[in-house]
Amino acid sequence: EVQLVESGGGLVKPGGSLRLSCAASGFTFSNAWMSWVRQAPGKGLEWVGRIKSKTDGGTTDYAAPVKGRFTISRDDSKNTLYLQMNSLKTEDTAVYYCTTAHTGSIDAFDIWGQGTMVTVSS
Amino acid sequence: SYVLTQPPSVSVAPGKTARITCGGNNIGSKSVHWYQQKPGQAPVLVVYDDSDRPSGIPERFSGSNSGNTATLTISRVEAGDEADYYCQVWDSSSDHPVFGGGTKLTVL
Image (cartoon, rainbow over all chains, first blue to last red; front, side):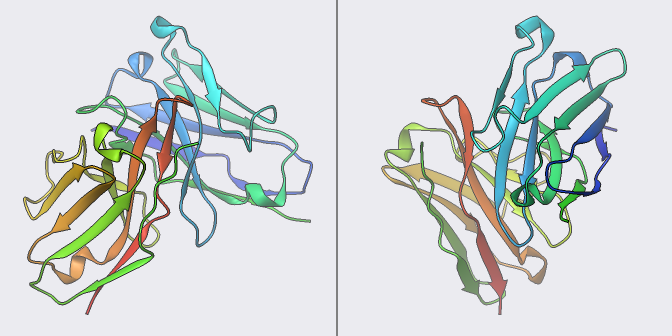
């Protein structure tokens, strides 16, 4: 079964740090371009960033609101994606999903994790 | 950056047809994807590349895209279709995906 499982969410103070993980199974993780998408309470979906497969360069790209504060990485030996979040702000409070385009279109996200909640509050 | 505009809400009676629009500048030149999200759940892809359906998605879900508007059509609407729906495209200028603001579908 194709599956993504996020973990690592929680409550953190403004200015603090948190690292999210996303464990993948059921597909060739090393070939996948992986993204993080977040959803603030009661709001819509917002793309956070992406990491390409190592064969495609392994490069990362980020949305403007998180650039310079968030870092995406991957460990293909562990089939795991990471999101390191530093200098957190209250506006980063959201459910964070890892996702990928597995079949069909190259940029349609057809596999999603269940999400992990991050709350930034003093 | 590229902006996608969706109506905040659409209401439809059971058994009728719901149409949810997604507006964007020359969106007809892009591939549009649609997601369904029910409360407390992760999004689910229901239409990709304007009009294709992933495996397991009912034929009642269809899509079209032309000019400045893409449309998700849900035929013979059921109570279980009540959800938020989001359109998404890839913005080639920023090399980022962009989501619409979402439309809440209410089944009367």
